[in-house]
Image 1 (cartoon, one colour):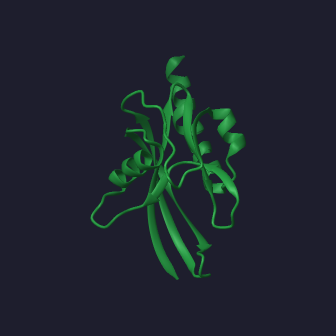
Image 2: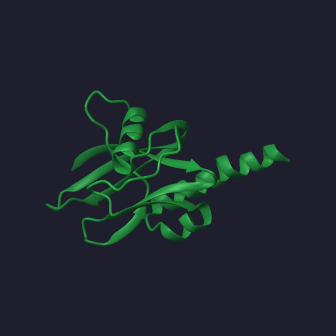
Length: 144
């Protein structure tokens, strides 16, 4: 079994989330959030910031830690991989328009409810649930 570590970011701007459309190993197209491998000598936080910018063109800064998720999958060679992904809530540093990178099919800002309908990975559904409970509901409570 191989071990992998990645980091990613959920970027929020004006009530919208930055999402990417990617092609999976099985050839299916899915909407998800930008993430990628943590490079040697790189912190989880810097990896998340770098990956968001590389995949979307959006420079973002970390606002909070969402959580980490570990799951298993088989790579192209059939080797089982145990992967841990560290997720961060982020906000854009400037008003950048997202751009599509080589590995990304589409990039767009979507409202939270739309994101809940678009995601297919269980981990993404859990991320959205945590964001709703920890950040959105919290800010609504602070406003009342």
